[in-house]
Length: 161
Image 1 (cartoon, rainbow, N blue to C red):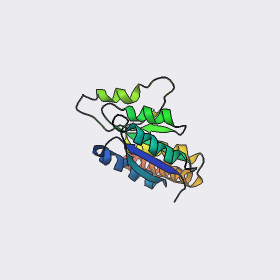
Image 2 (image 1 turned 180 degrees about the vertical axis):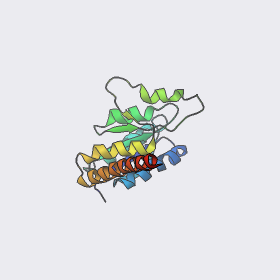
Image 3 (image 1 turned 60 degrees about the vertical axis):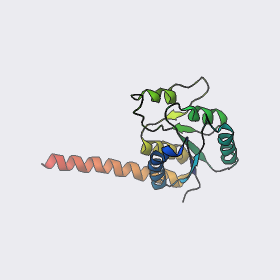
Image 4 (image 1 turned 90 degrees about the vertical axis):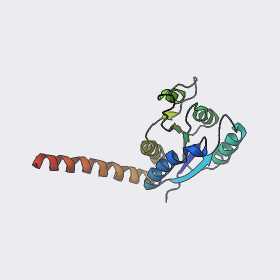
């Protein structure tokens, strides 16, 4: 198992199913994963406590924040750390998808990446961590090769029909 760490912070327990998809993909890419629950709106001191704990950890890491509706969590985390932050908000139907704007529009100097698909958020985290972690790099390369092989195989099958 790699030494790289993916810290997933969800705004509430309701976000757990979305986070499980991220975790599954991240584990396949060789990252160690921890999941925490903290709200920028309801428990800002708890968020900072979690961040202090992981920022003191010298391992390479990336944070993925998962919060719907009014996503203050991603900007709050990004403003508190120098580590990369990826916002992966769960799909929201209540506001016709308009709640996504709280993840897309951030104040100046606050720049979490936004990736909507859970597996792709894990992949971006792996690519960032691959810069310093050869094991994760190899897993990302193998993942990409499998994807390319599938396209080539599907084309060959289609072409012979």
